[in-house]
Length: 226
Image (cartoon, rainbow, N blue to C red):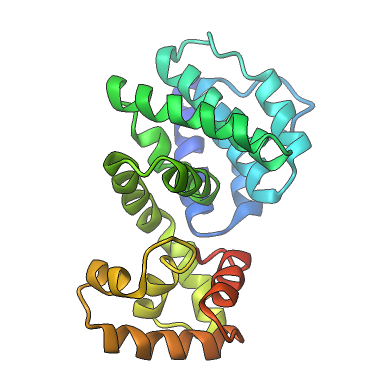
């Protein structure tokens, strides 16, 4: 068997790949014991919380956070990721204002210390917080992060999109529906004409069973497409 350090790193990578594919159960199996067992070590701690968040079990996610020894050999990155996932859990349990304040400081520290990958690997839960922060603090760097993070969990969206009958191009459009961008701005981001965007929107509304952009955005969020 590989040394424990290598094994934990390998399991963390495998679990994140499975989460990107939308296979939460297998990701949980790779991570291993649930919250009642001993600490997973710094390499698995963040992804263990991420798995519980993906399951929708915020109580277990909080238990993982409480057992996470931030001083256990991972340095500044561990502290940053602990704050990040603490914000995600807080947002899901009613503390959204405090969560956004925490994420704002995490983004600043991640940029300064070179740990942006911690944000990029966070998946939909982190992306949603960054999008909310963009609405209140529309900084160019935040917009850049959101644009970078969305394609990293696109494999899961493609799977869900196939279930809704959406094409890849329609999936690209859907990701922008919950944002404050106008249709013209979305067309510009995707390098397509406004008329082409309208065609895509009509098809998306029909496939998602929605009559308006707001309704389609809610349906897309429910399906994990946006």
